[in-house]
Length: 70
Image (cartoon, rainbow, N blue to C red; front, side, top):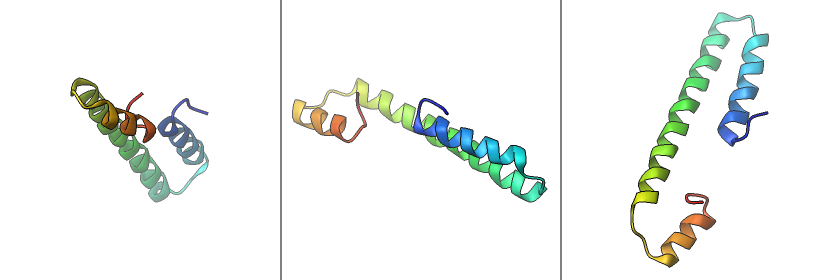
């Protein structure tokens, strides 16, 4: 499976997509995978923005605990 949660979900969806014969379901799975890429890109942009902003150490620790910063 993938390294990130997004990659893991995409791998699962891709494996199901490869087994489905119904074109409507294939379309829905492909769309879900595309939306997953969009969500990952948005999260990456948000993380980059947080990395560039000066925040207090208490706020930084909270964001790290929540998984927004590393």
